[in-house]
Every structure is written in structure tokens, then in C-alpha cells.
Image 1: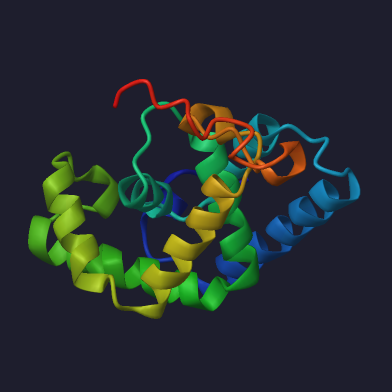
Image 2: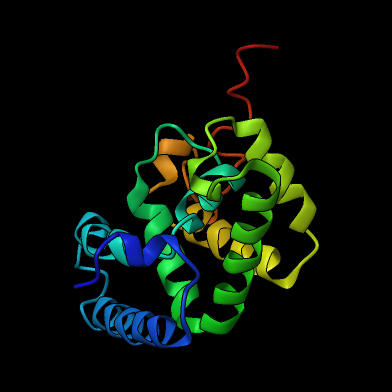
Length: 172
């Protein structure tokens, strides 16, 4: 097990390859188990393994106070497994910029506006786009999270919106 100090500095290629293997194992186990493994259990194992700042980045891209870290961690861990070099280089660049501007690691910046300003600087990079995409599908295409967002799910199977909810606008 790595100590937390090994996660706060630049991530080595060896460390990322280790994360990749672990994420592939978890992704495979989740697929084999048919999603029977609770996301919370995965997050408890995954959170210490995520690169420092990546979870904070994910929560800043799609901020939802009602969600715990588990859905974010699962999506980000899968991304690390699929594109380890991209994530390693991207998070190292973000951390370097954060230290240059704020003299601290990205996840240690208390002011959300300062963190968002750093993210705006990298929003056109492949790293940011891949992270945003992984989170978008991981959070908003996750049926277990639909109720937390107030989304009832697909209406096609239930006769469509005309027969179910079309005229439910009581605020007009």
C-alpha cells in the first residue's frame, strides 16, 4: 500500500501502470458481477488510489453536493484504467500550473473560483475533454443516480411522455 505522500507528488509511469491494472481488475469484476458490486464498496477501495487532485477536478467539473465521492471515483478510476498516460500527463500539468499560480496542489486550493479558473485554462486539452466525458457518462447515464437528479428515466417503455407527464406542468 502506498502512503498518501506518494499520491501528492508527480505520478510516475510505474504508479500509473499499477493503477491501470487495478482499475482493469475492478472494471472486469464489475462487469462479471453484472453491477452487483455496490459503487460505495468500489469507491472505498478506489479513492486512495486515484491521482491527487483528480477527484477534486471531477467534483469541480460536475458539482453535485447531493452525490458522494463514489460515483465520481468509479468514473475517474475507469478513465485512469483506459487512458493512464493521458491522465498522468494531464494531472501532472494541472498540478504544476496550480503550484506555479497558487503555490499549492490543486486539491488544496480552498477557493472554488481559483480552481475553476485553472480548469478553464485547460478545458480545450484532451485530458480535460476525456475527464469531462468520462464523468458525464458515469454520472448522467447511471440509472441508480437518476432519482438524485429528478430524472424518471426513459419514457418510451411506459408509453411515451404524451401518456405520462406531458401535461403535468402545474407551474404554468
